[in-house]
Amino acid sequence: MPAWPADAVRDRLSAGPPHAARPCPPRTAPGTSPGRRKRECPLPLAVHVLGMTAFALGTSEFMLAGLLPAISSDLGVSVSDVGLLVSAFAIGMLVGAPLLAVATLWLPRRATMAGLLLVFVLGHVLGAVTDAYAVLFASRVVSALACAGFWAVGAATAISLVPADRRGRAMAVMVGGMTVANVLGVPAGAFIAQHYGWRAVLWCVAACALLALTGILTLVPEGSNTKSTGPRLRAELRVYADGRVWLALATTALVSAGIFAAFSYLAPLLTESGGLPASWVPGMLALFGVGSVVGITLGGRFADGHPFGTLYAGTGAVAVVLAVLALPLRGAAPLAVGVFLFGVAGFAVSPALNARVFALADGAPTLAGATNVSAFNLGNTLGPWFGGLTIDAGLGYPSVCWLGAGLSVAALGAVGVSAALSHTPAARSRRTISSPG
Image (cartoon, rainbow, N blue to C red; front, side, top):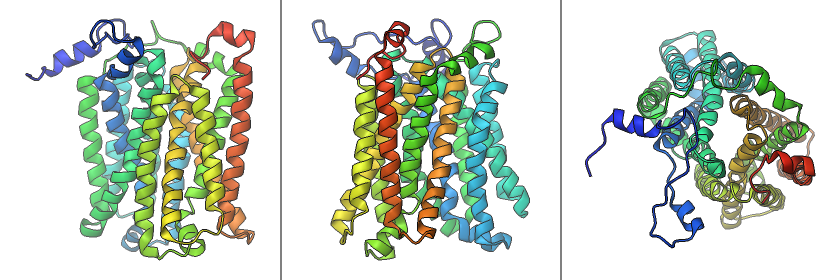
């Protein structure tokens, strides 16, 4: 089959009203059930381009964990100072997502994403060439702000390209890019750093982002300028008068905090409490990554049709798995099974968390995506902090698993309240969610 020219692909993707989600034409023989036709309907290629971009962003966000000693030695600063680069990125994501979402609300989405990616690339180039810790720190903050802004606009773009009943699948592709970054990008970054230095890793991430930028400019529809046809800031802010939106954001933060409270200390948990040699840790982390890919795939398939069912199952499974990992398990086999299932459960819930927020804030997709990014990063920040407090209190490494399980149970309670509120007459009349699952 001959390849379509780039312009033809872009025109085909952007046909129809700007950013309008178009139903998928049936691709099966007449008489095939509608459910079968839906399952075979592919997502737009532009959504996969956004997922590829998320891979570059995710690699940048998580790669420094394996580069701390090398950066410390090269720049002549302490490992703890270099560790602040990780916190700087997280805080930049937390604060930058809503601020940049508001600042770019009136700009065309493709142009906004392209500009943010270019800033992201320049931030990594600056970090790769500097010998000053302060400049490297600033480059990480700038990169985080660009990453946060792109994620907010990119998530809104992804869900606008598909019908409402495919939003979970679209978000699974984007979150899946971040997941694959943990499985492939971060280990690859560690390998490159060992052989070519930590600066080479920044250059590689910049190159991946440039490739993604080409895909954005070529294949993602431009969309409309919100000054004339899109939601205005007042309309976007209006959705936050709905308490269910805040409840959904709190659920996101609780789920994320529960997962990262335990995941951040997984290595010492396996070695100090589980009795595994340190050489087993990379393999176990890779196993977690494989589980996360499986989880994000399953979650994306079920989040659209059964959003609350997916939230209940995924969050409940996280609580159960963490409670089991907190037990005095010994031996590689049971720990490997537990770590794998932790990855599956932890990431299966992500598409449903995103889809729930977008369903409730249907008229404010850009700001909703931004605040949900902030909610995820709030959990990513608070979870490890709370976990560190339990360890410092002398409760041992298994305590982080009990903490994560407790936070997951709290998230289950929030899901239950959300489900109850979704069945009220007012909620049904607004049709904020296509199926309560």
